[in-house]
Length: 414
Image (cartoon, rainbow, N blue to C red; front, side, top):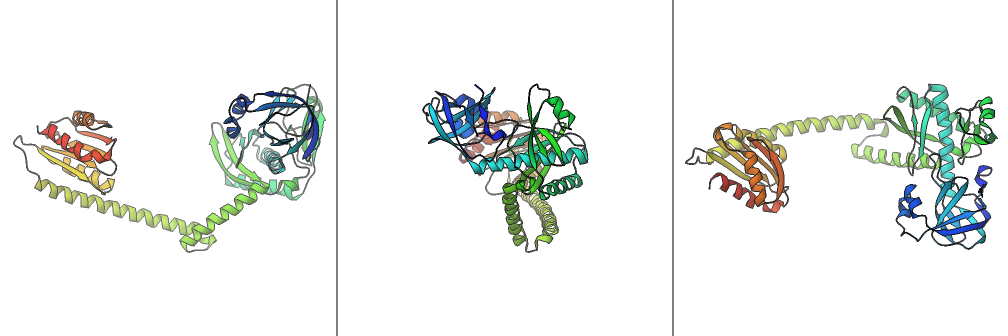
């Protein structure tokens, strides 16, 4: 029996009465398929599928998530669209007979604002910039439309946002129309639908007519501000992020709070924020470059001094083994490069705080750093690899770095 969908003609219905036609255990699998993470964690068998003769609950469909609310004292956690029936997934069984339904209005109205805003935005992108919408997603925090065509650069985004908000300010009527695909095509529907029977379409006065089964506001003024958040490439299309109404208000406040915190740290006004940030970044990069150069020079000087203290063995080999504690990675790398430039020299270096290993040699040493690392990692667990002259790795337990280093030295000089 088809469910009478009350939201088709009156989206402002918050409460309604209906007859429970059936209530059967199940629903966990359906919840997982619809991406309802919270509800899908409910143990199998703890959910119930309820059919009503009429319902104001919107099921997940067309990029818009489902409503939530209550049927009697049972919480509705998911709503499914199965053929012509609306299935309500609830957390406890409901008896056959009359029941009162209550829709979570905050969630419903938020979805109405976002979906109607999407229709306005898509119509503007299509009519003014020849960028048709190919998909829509109403997310928990951000909504997106994927448009096809040229890249919507900043001037296009600004123009689309201005034109869309002009429609909001004009407070145009949003009407529901019914007709066959042929009848809707004759009156200028934006997107044709190859489906028989009577179709539902949303008409925004003097803007567009679009087939849609979702919930929408009654006038564009109820959408509130439409705020574009950014654009990114998605395969052959462009994904535009946006929010409307209360979401736009909330994110605008959060954005300003973030901006205020940043400019307070930069000790400038909001208008000077961008230039001040650029200056700070430039200074940071210059300081980083200078510090890195100084670290490298210091490491090279230390390596030369260290080489002077290490005696050459009877076999003509000089083994430089060192456990570093607290030195930055740039210092260790420069130290290793300088040591490995000395003939008949092997460098076995480990950073104690992270267990990072660096084995290297001058080719005249004629050892195999990869083989040495592999053997040492069998003694003290870790991972690594490399070549004959250079090998890198990391210990599973950095606290065993000294033991690892001693073992590696012993393998070079039994």
